[in-house]
Length: 290
Image (cartoon, rainbow, N blue to C red; front, side):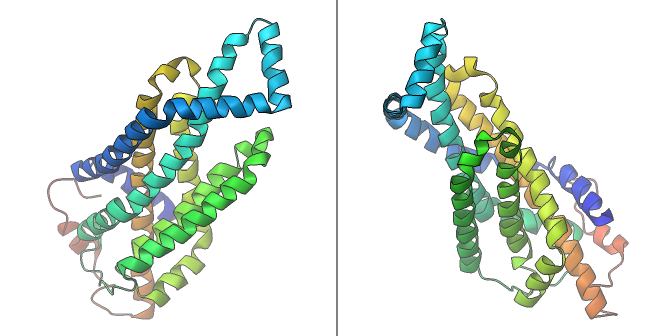
């Protein structure tokens, strides 16, 4: 628990670093351009397709007809855009996670390593292509779990539990792998991910709930649907900040545990036995040592 809390406040402090802020903007630019292009070419057609599908279902047709009969027909125009957004935002979030894993994660791990674990040996346990394949495989499993669990989202308690749990599992698998890929050997990575499965999954679940919060930006206020493209971009940026914080949290925790593992297995090693003062002296003056 102490290591979880220590890693948490360190990750929060690092989010104020200019490099972290800039890195959070890069995926935003990519996903923002993609959202704008898709919205320009497919927004109207998506609305038409969803509206036609709702009219084809007798249950939804009856519900929408009842709304019109009680004078709430205006809600009919809000339901379809909400559904389109509910389908579009998760896809953009998944893309953002992949961009974070491929673009941000290595740089954030390197930032943490340079500032706090400068003497920790890099043993290059996993090549980049394995990290990419691992991220894609975990993402496909998470998407499959989301699709399969969608009918259960109609049960009020489960909609608050299942998506964050799935996002948490995905973050745990992808970010733990990437945090250790450069520094740990394959055996060290597997041992750490197995021995610390519950704490790492806990980090993933907490950040999964944090990642669910930005959805309230567009989900709560239907009156702002006219600004749907802007809201999607803002939501993705908030998601990206959460992912950056998650990457930093995983990096601090995983590298600290890797250092502790080597200290136990290699007593007297210069790498693992380095005092805290040496690690702090390695911090450049751009950010107060944390």
